[in-house]
Length: 415
Length: 83
Image (tube, rainbow over all chains, first blue to last red; front, side, top):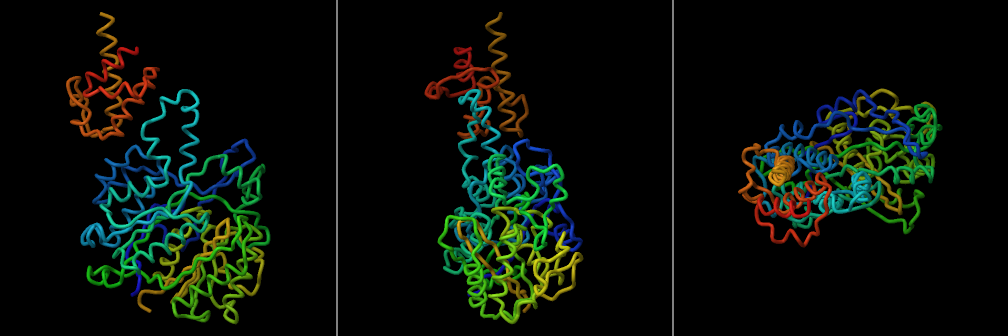
């Protein structure tokens, strides 16, 4: 049985929906901006979502009224997740014809999603614990995203959150695909959840040298530079995304438009608690994902790299790509969506799956930004402007602290 | 008349918070004789009205004491007792 993608939604620093994300990718629009000094030595760069208005965004959807009733007082990151879920749900035509409610699944990718919300309420708690809002008991839990999205969209099949640090998005795609493959559900929404980090967590990531532009007077100089010799770390981006994975038969019986096929994937641990990337693990999941898809390295036309712009991470990913692709290394285009929208943390894998499918459907590859001196001259990095490209198969990589190696293969719908 | 004034004040605070939690309501729909459930509030909405009102009025009432609250009037009475 084939698992296909029938709907997509996205909301990030450069775009509030899929059509504008398409334009932003083609133009190479960058959402990364300098931020006010947090005063704690933490990051000075970020890619924030701007001008988000939940009531306005929700009103575009059939489920908008229910969404407003259920989530009007929910934390904004949850509201953003919900908007992308409604986008994908309607894009898939599930508001018109859908499998029975208990045949619809929901996987929310992410963990530690609401630390910023908890942080913001801490003064109130310190002042008087009795005055914590009652809804805090719901909203501090990651699973609030599952409950709220399922209530608004009437999803009553299997559902849960899954986690894998920065690889969470792909971990969600793997689990969503398995739910469909196993027959547990006919269709499954996979939501890459907006990760609302607290200042303390951001500072913690700066402490171990993972972020660009921390504790500097000139954060713009640092920039986000995936695959460039001057890369020095990632920049956190706000983003949420959703894809609808569906049993091909279910999609065809509904007359749904098939956007792409999730043809293969793999997820392997490195057996480590450390943040270090693992060349062997990364190469292995790419190879296994291709095998599952029934293709070889020559069939890969494009790689959406994990490429957060940390020196060690970028370097190891290129080495792993060389190992996985062998003679074909240098053939597929390679770019980093994180150079445009920042690192959307737990949502990144889903945001980047959406970016990959968009490029596949519109026959281009988006630019790499700030790539002036590539760390490797054999790898076919997209230059600073979008290039026309016919993508039959793409790899999309996500790796996470704690040894999470993941790769997915997306196949063009008509090929 | 300080007693009535105070009760009105408490009711107005409750009403303001009910409208925050249930923005689809009009102020006239929230009456001292109504119940939060009848207005469409679920259990978390009701608890929210309580925590928000306690914060606004600067008071702390043990959770257990709300067990006997059945309508807006008994909520206002309980808040009044602690004011």
